[in-house]
Image 1 (tube, rainbow over the protein chains, first blue to last red):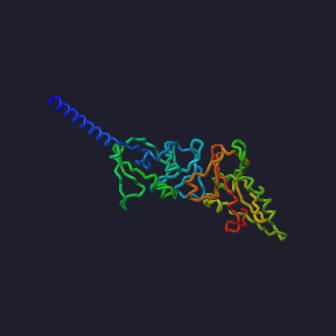
Image 2: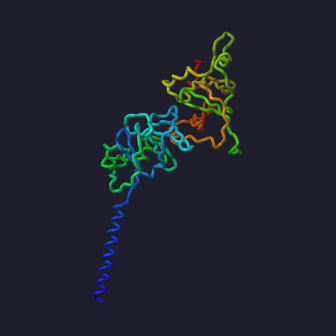
Image 3: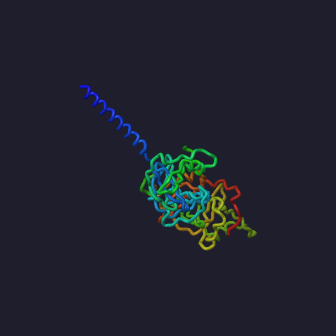
Length: 173
Length: 151
């Protein structure tokens, strides 16, 4: 009887241990979807929850009077979206879109906007622990949400809501 | 009540430089050739008293973009305000098209937040985006965008 009770206790202890280990694995495996793209040869990322779609770049109609970071309006599957030049926003040299360029359609609340990227590398699932928040230091670009790595290269994760707030006068934060 | 499938707007399409615009013809009081407009506003002594709105300034078109300007046909849109006729010069007229509700799109909010009350909607014609201009927002016409040039 005692032997049986001991065995039962041991089994229950092992089950509990296994459960804890599974919990730890689950925490470790929490992953974040990241749209990784390149701009002027460097890698950048957007959190997937702010990305509505990725499309080829069609003709972009300029809007007179718009600031230089607004490329204009474009036809996205029969709808009209604004297109922004991310290079102007993060102070990189501008270039013309080519066949590899993509418009990443981002959305914060009900406002959407296309962000021009030189090319989209991958939509990756990255362990949350591998995305390092950059904090609020004055030396860090306020539009950067964090950093991670992809294929051994650094990826700067950009903060879409902050881009909307700083560049689009978006009130709905 | 507007019917979804019935034409709701007749829109005059034109260019100014590389920009493609449209205006609801119900908002204007006529379309003339520049020469006709000039004759209208000559007084008895032959002095030109044109009241031409500066379309560049009104639509926010940068001045360095005027390379195509002299190559195309131009027209003057007539706008009446308090008994006076004003002219709004446009280039490369593309004709008048009928639009239904389904052909019209809101200007994306991103653009609305930045400015631009002059543009109230957009449409797509042959794959090109056309900005619809609300000329009623220009009245009263007593600001510096009025010029005396017909070039």
